[in-house]
Length: 287
Ligand code: PLP
Image (cartoon, rainbow, N blue to C red; front, side, top):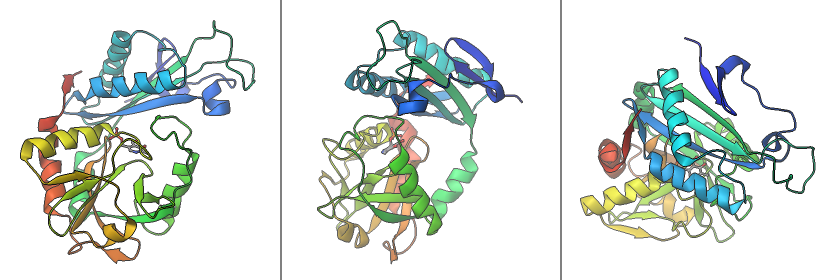
């Protein structure tokens, strides 16, 4: 089946979809994005993703490319037109097309919008969750505004590639104080030996993950022991469990960090349970 993308007002063949060479996303990484999970023909937590998109746009003084209901409509359309039952939908908004110049373009330049969707295999992701993943630590080297979901992901690309070359699936950034901030494309969690779930506060050093927020709802609902505070790499090495969260993998158990086996080397019960319950704590919008 041929794939369809939405580009600046038109649904086009994915293979032919293109933006102008002077799009500011292409030249300056001057844009933001969101990735939503599609699960059973539903877009997961779309309102929260669009709230965060609005915040990212506003922090960078980029206008919405169209009204929010219109964006919702296009997200649903792209999922439907690509017949995605399980997978993801991606939206990117940039400051638009203009002569290359660092200064913002004139006010009449409209933001650019691109939406794509693709299927993924729940069986493959579940198989990975049953085995657990390895992560590798990496010195934090990103700008301080990681709370904005920008397309400027070069540090994340390099950190994740470095993890991959060592046999891992994710990199964990470690700040100057020795604390884990987050993953290259995920939020980081541990469970201490006495069963307390720990994740870093979203006030600094991390993106406020939508999956993280949904998991926090679940943690509260299930009455799990929980603390929002920074944790060190050393503490993570010694944890009973570790896992990462993101729209693309829900809660993914971590069984190894650097050369240290975590817990008994198998996915932990807390991560596995949160993974199972995840969609009972999310807002589901039928496409
Ligand atoms: N942290 C970073 C740096 C990310 O890129 C992502 C997702 O792309 C996340 C955390 C997880 O966010 P979400 O749960 O909204 O997918």
